[in-house]
Image (cartoon, rainbow over all chains, first blue to last red; front, side, top):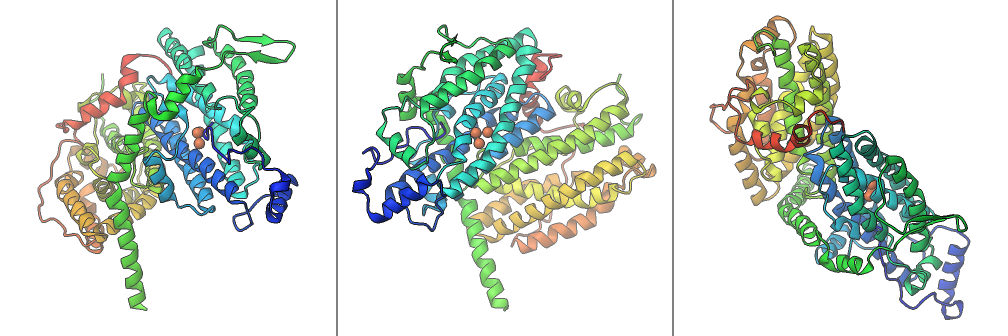
Length: 331
Length: 256
Ligand SMILES: [Fe+2]
Ligand SMILES: [Fe+2]
Ligand SMILES: [Fe+2]
């Protein structure tokens, strides 16, 4: 998802016998469905795992501005331009809420940004794929925001209060993005010209497997995920969410008259689910280790923006300090 | 066949309003994802969004006034460089964040009194659109003047950058006050005041903000022109339109 392969302790779920009395009380609160708030006691490992997870999610929103930003200046109508601008603005807002949620855990936004730029923190693999035609704006909204929703709706019930509340605000906007993207696909794939239909199919061909990868590799045996699920900072397994995504998306593709690029895709009456091919996980591991089609470009764009903006941030700070001094002197 | 400016001055006037909003909105949208700080990404997107919304209003009405069946989208995406009527200052590249903010300020400082006066237009549609746009322009001016002040006052480097921005933009800032037959026709019809009538109130705002920003008002009075008449744009507009219009030009008649 936006947070993929987040490491927790790596030791599996801590057994009650190994817990300190505080940790036991903490786990009991989680088991009762209580929310953990910033000032409450929390085990260090819980705090660290959450910082990784929320930070990765925040970075994904920020880097996620770029593939869609790529088409704002080429949007085909004024209305589409406005919609896309509003969407990318929402993503920046999501980044802001999430950095704020992370800050309640004792890490500053600047520290997190620095970790992104020095590649000590990651962002979702999906944003390392290029957006090549206008249909990609449809496919990204439909599939990428669609996959994000699958993951984020359950996270509204996550155990950490500030994270859960950020998710509630974010989810409302993500479903709007998904509909907007799907509407672009309708215009092109269903009602469009031959050229537009071709663009729409091509976008689905390129984004289908990367969208499936967003959920991360199967984690049914992952020790990290087991601990995160015990802490309720992860609610479903990656496979559950991926299946749910496929089950919802296939009929939508059919409605559009588009073909999902998977020969093995078929409905299974017994399970009540679609069977589908796994994405190429070796590609996924290449992408998250820096070898995706756009990794270098995305990171250098973000680094350049940060460096080019340094004088602005310094000046704003200097001005704020001077104004404070002036108002103190006037008192 | 399109009527000339002399034959349809109201259409010409509306294009000037709409094209200013469109071209500045487009330039502003180029900041998407690469602003100096997240709050500015959000603010710049918001600004661009307001301006694109204003474009829809002005160009939508322009299309009606023209009476040739052209929509706001037709006017935005299917006109040539010489049919655009925006100020040159708004089409030149963004430069650094400081120059982008200085340009925004110089424009907002005019837009606020201008739209205020347009609210009293004898043309009720113009008055209505102006009233909507004014609400946004007041907010934009508030924001851009604060940013110019902060960056002018901030550090030695930021002061130098803002001073460079001002030097670069100043010769473009006077274009809006060079009145022509279209302006006189609008003034006579009571649609709009003469832009030149607003020069002193514009200058007052500019002087006040620049002083607070520790910047010096440039002395030059020379003004570049050719944007709002369409006679001679900069080389930059063609590149902007090549990008902006690519889909509409490549796939004529397609709906998106
Ligand atoms: Fe988002
Ligand atoms: Fe998103
Ligand atoms: Fe989104």
